[in-house]
Length: 406
Image (cartoon, rainbow, N blue to C red; front, side, top):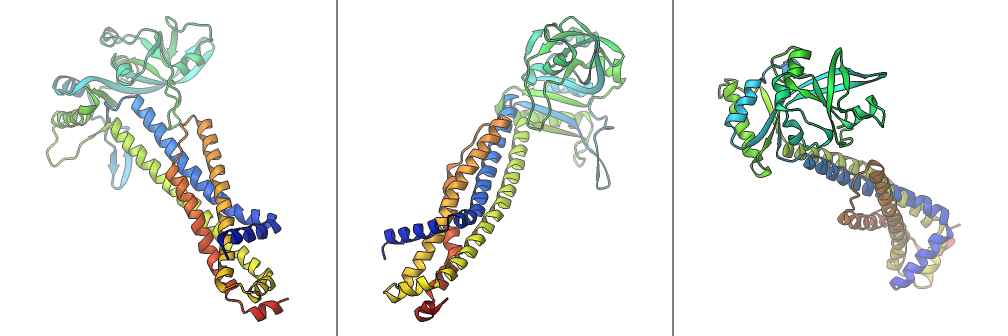
């Protein structure tokens, strides 16, 4: 029996039970659709995170306080006071591959303007913070060196803060808001950057001179962090090594002592994000693959039912000259067609789902042709693998007993 006849017989057999065939394919459709969607969304999220971090410049370097540990418990870095202004000056003077550096002091306070109020995320920085973090001004001016030197009560606010404290037709520049109990004059408004991949609003920020935050608000003499910029992306690793050496000397750490600070580059963040995204994508794809196996078991189950229902037909075909091989190929064709049609529908479903989610989350849509091709091959393999045993059973029937079957 040639392939054309096998396909024609398989097609007619499936058409006789259209509802049952669709329900059988459902497991394969869901499995393949889930695999395609999970892999595509994983790649989309990874690309989106990479683009976002790259937009900040992979030459940005962050220095943070080291976590405190008590036994095996991580206590965080809230009470660590290892970073100081002297560290910033040492980096500025001795790090040859660092072009800009700013102290960072974090604070939170209620912001009030007239009848409007907003919970504020205050960040004490110097005039270089905006350039290091690739922010731009929508209007007004940046914090100046003189503002830092004189501990001026001035601020540059993010777009979200401006929208919540002022009416749309009001110009925030020049107006006075209260940061906690203190009056502060707005000197600039930042252009918007939107929400990052962690769900944090990058525009919900209030920049002030770090001297004002340290002395007037927190009364502290240590920093919460340091942010620097390497001269170029090519020397970011050299700059990181320089900063590490400088801080170890400043903190008088012996060679056998661990660092009491952490140094991160944007590339480290990119690598970490890619690792996490890849792991989650693989995990979700494995879970989706389990549903694909369940779909294959459904095909095996329905093929068993089909063999039982068509026992007399099998006996008749054998009686008029069909060989065992022909019967085997006939049922293998049916199971493979079921799986392939389900796979094609599943691929379309998965691509539509991933496109819809990517569009809703404003992620770039990623289509992996190797995964699509592999999914198609897997569908054919599942149809043949799970259809083999029922087909083998059909081919092994005794013609006489098959003709007598009721």
